[in-house]
Image 1: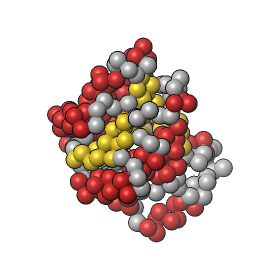
Image 2: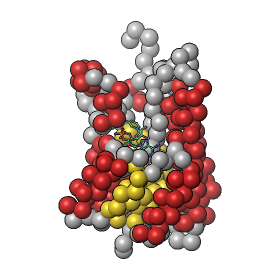
Image 3: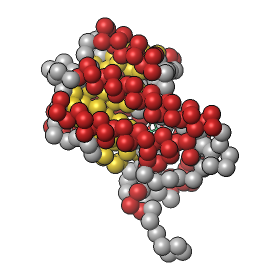
Image 4: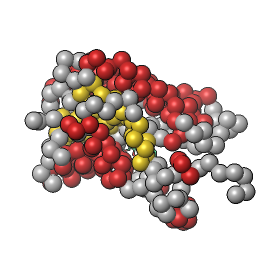
Length: 251
Ligand SMILES: NC(=O)c1ccc[n+]([C@@H]2O[C@H](COP(=O)([O-])OP(=O)(O)OC[C@H]3O[C@@H](n4cnc5c(N)ncnc54)[C@H](O)[C@@H]3O)[C@@H](O)[C@H]2O)c1
């Protein structure tokens, strides 16, 4: 069967690895990214490896642009069977330092953009079902310090996905979350130095960060025919990071 997927943030670390993996599994990919060069580079990789992909340059934080890109995808490739939503706005800042504009931007890109995307894609899946996968974050449930906008937006994004899972079950549209732990991506290199990344990796329970391919493997299973009855759940891929966070002070 010829399956088609929209992957957002597909020019980045986790999105790019997911797009490559799903393409290797025989799925035709629409690569949505605001960065044209990054999206086209992943498109070229997939095509060179014998897969099928097409880049769409879109700001996923702009609902009108999302609608237009979904329409272009449908015109070029047809109805999507799978959506992987992986765009989030990440700017560090705590309660005391952040600006209202930052909080608004985080909610606009991470939540409103994803809402518009899920709504439009779900509408196109009503008659034949589908899979929606949202890339989540530990911040959705753990309030990390110095990331207030990201924390708020990730919590809302999680609730968006779970509400969608509830409402879309009668249409056989499965909605799940993959929650990566700390993953080695170009995005992380914008926030932290190489020296810090090397030092902090050693202190993780697994002794290293996840690779984007390890996150992509979880996505690939959740959108595979085998996982048809899995909906409304979160698959955490974090090398035991979350369970290792709770400690008695000083122990
Ligand atoms: N890297 C981690 O440790 C980690 C952990 C948990 C969750 N996540 C989540 O995984 C997702 C991907 O993270 P990553 O580390 O691979 O990031 P990344 O920076 O490597 O890639 C992000 C991609 O999204 C694109 N993008 C950004 N804003 C966009 C917009 N408005 N419209 C369209 N495209 C846009 C960028 O151009 C880039 O190609 C994010 O949702 C992030 O919150 C990452």
